[in-house]
Image 1 (cartoon, rainbow, N blue to C red):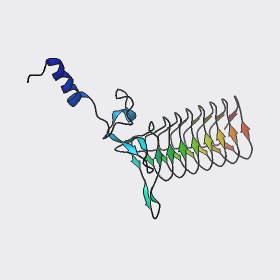
Image 2: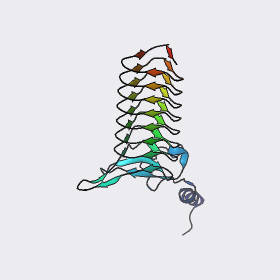
Image 3: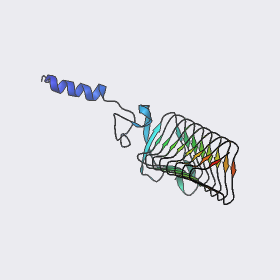
Length: 209
């Protein structure tokens, strides 16, 4: 049987041109704009059996066998991605459209969700939460029970820990430390060697350095 030229072209395109970025494709919502810029990887499966997001072959999502409890590990949401040389382990949760890239680590019982992006050498751990349209990068660390959310940015060697909150359009950078019950919000800027702690509030339009 002779295939028509149209059928032959369609078959050729399917077999040889359509890109394949993962062993399974449940986490590839848009093949034109695939997660992690189209690098090789896999759609993951979580330790509870649920379908997970994209994990690049160079990245690491580590689950462990716990005696009597079976396999235990992090949770990667269906639309989330772990790229480059990033690592996610422990009981961490990466959900929504969150992206972990570069050499970033997310571990402990930390959560990253929404449209948050964690990159560079940043660490999110403890029970820290990063969500909204936040970007945490450089060598910044979010830990303890701290929360960074909305449109804020934390970068450089900054540390946010304890029960501190960073929110709004706040920028926290340099070697600054935000801890205990401190709040930084609005368009506040915290940088240099600033120490913000106790119940201190750095609010709209204010600077600390």
